[in-house]
Length: 186
Ligand SMILES: [Fe+2]
Image (cartoon, rainbow, N blue to C red; front, top):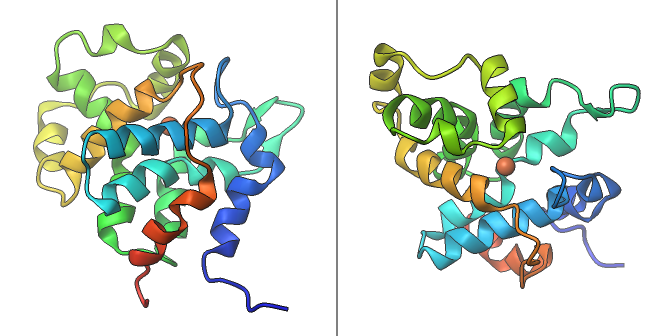
């Protein structure tokens, strides 16, 4: 028997049934993650940002699925901070911070980029309300002072695009070497 790998617990979430739950009408959670990572790689993003793109919705895989509700319980309210905290077991802030800020980045873009809010999907518009709506000027200022905010904004754009009917070329395990290179204690 081989020793358990430090990343198994994390990658198992993406190999599990939870990852085959639908993210939206088109893609599963797993496919959404893979497409986001692929977009980050195509943009030439650093490894930590590619990892953040792959793992940005990990909080949704750990928040209980409510079968009566047919939805992840409070997924839009807390999955960013749940994910950030969980990923801190393996990675440093260069990976975890953009994950923790990717919902705030939507509120940021709604406040700072004309036309951005108009391009949001109906689901995303609904969750924006729950998330607090567009940022105020003070919130924009505070957001731009936080380390990792620019990566969070990039991640947000890939997040919006990672809903294609064209499947990603790579599998979750293809990212293992990249993730290993970012392990905090490795
Ligand atoms: Fe996402």
